[in-house]
Image (cartoon, rainbow, N blue to C red):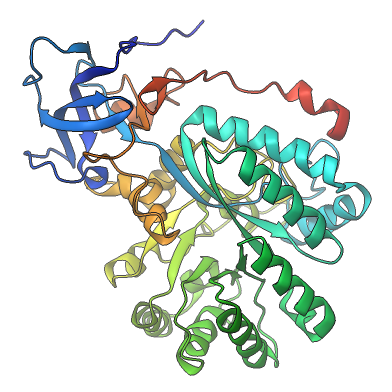
Length: 437
């Protein structure tokens, strides 16, 4: 049995003493850093961080817990998920683990099963898992082929209201861009997205109509005050250059909203000069990039009887070095696009460090699941430790990177507004009635 490594005081004012904080996710505290880690005392008053002090300088009269150099992180931001697909694997698995196999399995399951009650049950289960792991901000893509767009966005709106004090939720309409040719459908989709306060998304493909499709999309987004979040180049085909086309469309349409591109796998398959030109263009127009390393390791370069030759990830370091806002996220969870996962940003972070080689040094790595995704999602008030911010924190017994990255940190403690939450994860048996065992 796993027991919490400390018990924070149940007091209106208390301190977490001798804590180790990731400097990249800590604001307004100047202290010497070792591998991007600083030592501090965190004073919490009535659920708010009221002071960040040098380690050991908390006044003697304060209630306190000694973390013995254990890490304290802000709650996490998971900026690219698919809560509507989650946990359908037992009901409709991916027969061969390929991208095309995933598309077919999801299509079959959606058409047969995605009622409001079904989506609600699985989405709520996912949110309970994410909350227990320490997440406070999530953006989900919602499959938005008619009539599913009205079903899922309505469920999402209800869920956003029900969870507003625990997890801030955003939603993006996901659909094949060629479906915009059905003008009645697209007009209705835009109306639903606008009404529910969402974003417009889509899946881009290299077709003769790509530029005109992007123009329609960006004009609709501009006319309705919508930001854009697209699925881009999720393939090993070096000829897939829709990321470049998106950047050119942003310029051509003088689009002023936020644009995010997810996946961008083919960028890593292109020759150096072509990739460099696209990276520079993306930086110039201000597109944000989110990498989904676990899902893309699972799907990309999968062929029967053949060991994969590449990792399926985008040029993360090159994009970041060019000044592009970059982050990582969970993506799919126990569905045909990714058979595993639990919406745990610690797992995502740990695997991203390994897959993307974000170590040596690790100094700023913590940003990829905290400040960077929060900023991209327009929530600079979240994903960081700062005086005046809510004491939404995740406490770990691990003191250094090697300890943090070597175990799953299942004994972590999550504080929301300075109070310890129940970290019990929902039992998969709860889903048996909708997806089977």
